[in-house]
Length: 256
Length: 263
Image 1 (spheres, helix red, strand yellow):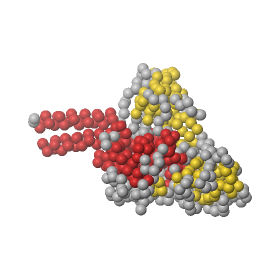
Image 2 (cartoon, rainbow over the protein chains, first blue to last red):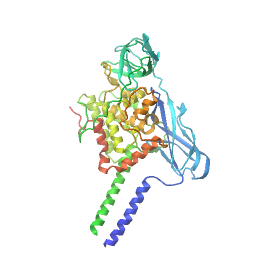
Image 3 (cartoon, each protein chain N blue to C red):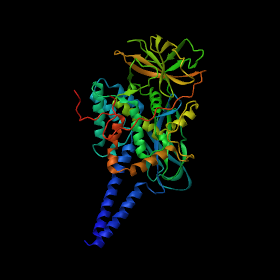
Image 4 (tube, rainbow over the protein chains, first blue to last red):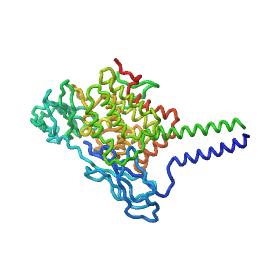
């Protein structure tokens, strides 16, 4: 094979490779789009928590202009780790994108939306709010704290020792106070504990974490309840600790 | 003339290998897509919690079952054969050793290190990075849903100590991957430290180590992260891409082993 033929083959291969690379970035079709559905729940700090993917169904409602594509219905399908392709989905058009989840309390994104070619449509479903434990009172005046705090929930047990109640700063995740329950319900539905020393606690949001004591003395985390504290404004608090240094080449970062 | 064309051919072959590595090992290892006609939920916190609750002692089968469930959230079917199995095996062995009292725990800072190593390598935006406060906040927010996973703690904890300073290997890996999912999919976690503080009352100091880019993007942050991951994975050398999972476990603090449980 002479050098001219080799050159032509290499140029052809170069164009082929470039075409593959360009095409790998996605289709340039005028039809089709992607869909997925996700479940969310509320966290203590009021933020949403992604809890997992769920099945999605989508169907076309009407065109928005000169739409193309023959597909007007999709699913139900479970799209894990990434959206599903609605091949030849008719666009631009208004579609209804629905999480197929019987436990959906509230839809967090509009079901009916204008879908354009190549777009990704994500349906979001609120499945539950945290409701495992609740504190009473749920707000503490730091200059006049209550004598006791009652926490309601389930699974509370004194089998190996009275349950432990730990107060964590919701911002930093640092333990600020700890106490032990003084009374618990026979059915495990509530406990009462003296309010711990909160003299170094400042105004802010906290989580009361409730744990049963296990046979080996460790704590079995049961759940948590949000609580707020007020009337002692802080010195402005703290950045997170700096990022840990990288590990050395071929060296683990294990705890010694 | 022949030498020039030989070099050009080598470059083309090399670029094909990188392209293959990006889409087989890189992009699909981080996120991917699989579709089934099942109608039940997948990779919910409830399933992870259930499997975590079935582990007693160093029960290898139960540990493997939990490990498999954690991986269900990522479509690993496109990854090179053996890569995912090797990661799982390392995790399972480390967890067995830890529960047997011969292996090492993982620091909560390991989660930060692993997350930010991957985020840094892929060049994601600042708001996709994490810090130890965010790790703790995530754990506490997720506690009602995964109490079995977060598990047990020592009774004697000093005031000022962290919510969960030392974790088991599979706990740490699970928390790390769940937090990554929050960064990928959840707007409430796609925030910098300063943005979180501002949203929650603003009475905490914060210095942005990596200030957000000026100007608000009109793109959803999930899309920005997706695009950054695609670009970042494409910029990595194939060897670096393929070594990334092992490097991530090193950064997390998961012991390497030869597959033998230590005596």
